Length: 65
Image 1 (spheres, rainbow, N blue to C red):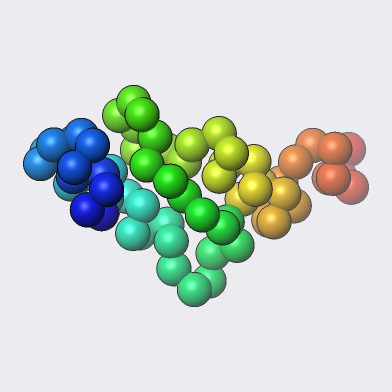
Image 2: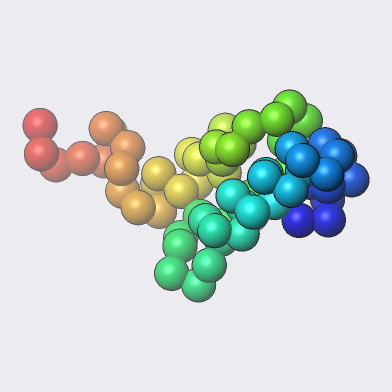
């Protein structure tokens, strides 16, 4: 949260920090979610890929084609 505040200011950093806290809890398999250089409420590309692999959401890993 502090990294997001320092990088993006109070409003955007606060929103980003809150979004990151909500998606980073003990029941999520996603790994590290570093603060991106541009404002977004979504995971960054590296963290999104790790999350999708951990949750087996990739099309390559899907068995329901």
